[in-house]
Amino acid sequence: MAAAAAFQRRSRALGSFYLHLFFHFCLVVYLGAMGTIAPSLTSPLLIACGVILVMLVHQDQLAQELCIRSWPLFAMVAIAIVSSSWSIDAILTIRQAVQLLFTVLLGIVIVAKLGVAGSLKLLIRSMTFICLLSSIWAVAIPSVGVHQATDAYQNDHAGLWRGVLSHKVSLGAFAGAATGLLIFYGHKAFMHPISYVLALSVTVACVLGTASATAILAAAIMASVLYAAYWLAHAPRGRRKGAFWILISIQIVGIFLMYSGLLNQVAILLGKSADLSDRTTYWPHVIAAMNDLSGILGYGYHAGFRFLSPHLYRVSGILLFEAHNGVLDVLVAFGYFGAIVIVGLHLWLFAKSFRLLLSTPPAIATVAVFPFGFIYLIFVLSYAESVILRSVTVWTIGLSMATAITVLIEIRLRYPKPPASYLRAGPQWTEQSTQPLYLACNESSNVPPNPDKCTDSSKLKVGTSQNTAASPQERSKLT
Image: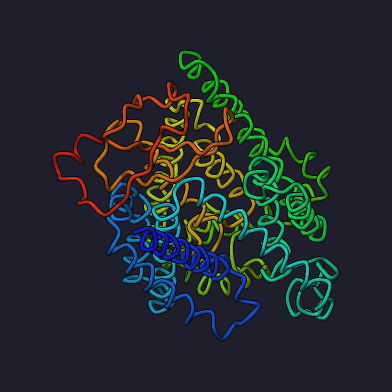
């Protein structure tokens, strides 16, 4: 009996190891690193990982439930697929839309299989690993990892790091987000102080190597918003709404200052020109071209600039492959109507993440703040970078994970005794104890349903996902 139990423990441990290894490999592929490491293998690996992800969703009832409740993500994927019917390059649009689908599935499946804390730990470690690869590429293979004066395009970036992400802006924003996450979560993802310091050093090196104002901004925003949200989640629930309106007011003022040009001096202080490296000079040309040509439906997901670039070059002499603005990229792909829907769905997910902050118990605030912080960063960066609804990027994976984490926590908070298929919520980081706190407890336990009252985390149990999923009647209770 003891031998059989030991064998089962070893089998579970081995299975968990291989599952983590697979997800880590998928993240390296879907975060864009393979485009530089092995370009010829990128597409086959994306497809292979995607097929396995579909199989994992098929056999995991929790993953299926998270997919159902993360419907805004799949609504955006559906719009991308439908846009192939009017796309100027239907094959490209379909291929990119399928990759977008797999990118969304990756984030959801990771959360379903590893839980909230496990998924965040894996994401942070994978991002740090890619920053490490980028540092190695920049130092050991500068012809690939560093922009060169002989580059055919944007050789004005000569000497700046691009690592394994092909461009200094991509690496900078990526490393900035990783740095912000490490500042807030790093001591949890890297338990040993030395490993934490080394990880933070690698991401900071990439931020400095790119000399990107976007990188500095991303790191500062990610860390500060996570800490602000953490403070908000610890405030008495009656005062959280007041703090919410303060944050909203600050955001509205910031948007006004940003679009009015009053923040140009801030851009100069961060090392950017007042026109954001010519971005503000060509955005009007993109809008004018959409108004003159086809602003109703756009030109298809990821295909718009194949048509728009020659036109913009003829009328303005500017050669563009993307708008460097998330909303304008969506506008070119889906037209005005599609852009309103896509941005509206993002706003809905953002509001959902904030509602979680208003109701989450302080005991799980550390993990509950991630969705709000990450989606907030996407909105801020979308002003000057193409980060909205991009396939095979950290932004879409992070958005998918943020949505799944929000749904998973809401299931526990709204349904004190969930079916066994919901019980595997994963260990959560708490400030009261180094013991793991689980969002879901065994139905037979006497633990109070409110995690605020759970003072002894050792009493909290983890269920399995082997039971049947919730019935439609049970599912309706969760909404």
